[in-house]
Image (cartoon, rainbow, N blue to C red):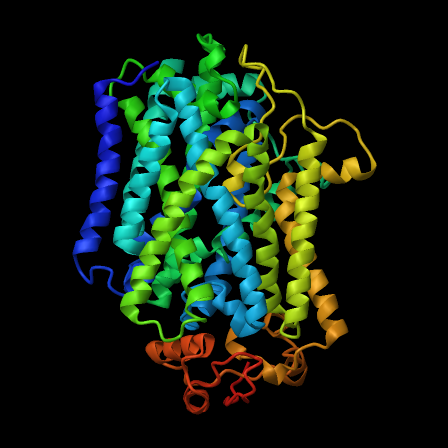
Length: 620
């Protein structure tokens, strides 16, 4: 199984096009001369490219390999995850995006300072950086390893090429280049998957034959209503647990929120979130159908080189090379599809890491930093994180079986971070002590369960695949992209005690960890003295109880506000609001200016700023 000249040409075209987009935005328009242009595309993007970029970041290479592998081995039950996409995207669109956009933030974690204080912001940012640095090397190395195993192409040649190209266009072109390359890469991903499905279906004998074979072998799953949280997949774990996964990814993850904030208006930002929904359903369907076609094909055809397939994820690439081997150019198209997923995810990581490092760690300590120097430093940070990605890819190659644990870290952190933001949004009486205590407890619980679960199932390396049913036990890489913990796919035996606790379905991890943060945060806040309502910026909270209990008399709904003032009827204009927020956060606004801004903008300040809010009463 080797690439033809046409395959190499198609693969190279993807790299050249991605680099060209970066060069174009480096040399045109504002030429990335300001941090707003480099990090937020001057807040000028329309909803469609933002939506496709959101999708591309979600649909990484490990998802392209992992979803078909999941369906091939366990059937279509995983497809029910699509049900969680509805609420998982409605909540960010209706609650999270308006709050972030109206505060005119650059880093998601600026919100934590506005709501709780500087210490919580630093904790949130440090947690995110740890999460992404570990993950970005793995997401580059994993598909390169699968590609190398099946095609024999140089492993480090692929890693270096992809890493350097991604670093180049991210550093030169900023977020605008990242978004537009994501658009191209999304289209390539669709084309690659469709090519595999069409050719594979034709070789099996049609979609009816694929469905019949899958049905005969019990791969078409019904609805599992079992409420047991230790059952790997059920309608509850996929539906409810999936909502928390989507919220942690599309609601508070810096890489995604940064795209919302790059939209030219709040309406466009919300529209981009809505537009992702049908695209996600299509992506999930393509992955699942690929898995069914792959299963049906190998029920009719023998695997010629089982020694090339050490893991289920290599199985997908092996299948692609097998069915497309007589069609020059199509294997190259799928590999371009595979690495489009890797490029989009990694470039998002570079840009978001540069953003939070600049906004949360550098600007607050150097308020006098000129715009030119800040932009240059942002580009250097993107370059530095790109080189760090290559180093992490090398470390991933040394991890061996610990590679699964490294991928799991991405999922372990998503839930606790979601919990901290939920504390801020929905529980106005919670304080910084509660937020920090909740985050630490949530992370400890996440790592305890995650690492305990991984260690309890450590086993000798499985032999190569010998037939279509003897797939070795390796984690489903898809869940890493969805910010959940990877777990073993093997059937669970009857266990008790801590061992039973460790067998909690991986689909509940994000929900469990974020709920832990919320409960601990509320308890600690009540014990240490809750924040007074009048000290809270009303723009940083979403008072859900008065809205849910809208039928109550007005005086009762007022009590459910916990003393939080009403937002002034006249909202500040966006540029002034941005100046106000950023001035408070980095200290560049003088005390006298702060008081003037409070008068004109209804109190854009931190709760510990020592200034009263000037608000105007409005009806609920």
